[in-house]
Image (cartoon, rainbow, N blue to C red; front, side):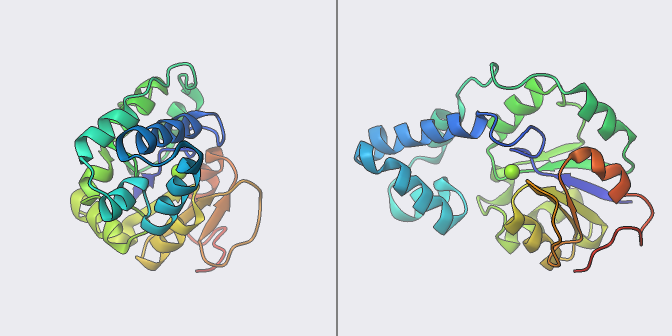
Length: 216
Ligand SMILES: [Mg+2]
């Protein structure tokens, strides 16, 4: 049976809606207050850690002394209720789509549960595979893809993954998954199987195989 693996942030809710900006502000505060990074450097340091290590947390672990649980609780304990609201259209779409559905996110479980709760999608997925389940090896690390298939007890070729971050879907294609990039604008991309600009295009993309396949 096909397994649909959906990313969380900026996939299940719109890009640039303020959620990640708020989380980033918390990370900046953590870097300044707990790690001692000068305030005027926190933005640069956060981006550098994330780009080099996949998540800021992995960068912090590699470069600094950091208490993982303290970091996750401090950064992701932020209230997002003014930024997210129930998504009945998406909920109905997920119910119509065939196969198993799971969330596959680099975010911590606490953040994923808050976001899904606010979107009223907590019960729309059989499983939430979060960073804690990936041995803190985030997408696009190949180990993350092994971890998610092992956890769900499926082979990569049974998985269709959907993510707004292109590098994550390209790595998914390399891992043997069918891939859908949720892109900001329509475009051709030979490195992934499908490009969509709205999750509502999934119904067309997941229709019988052979239609709309663009390479990879
Ligand atoms: Mg995302």
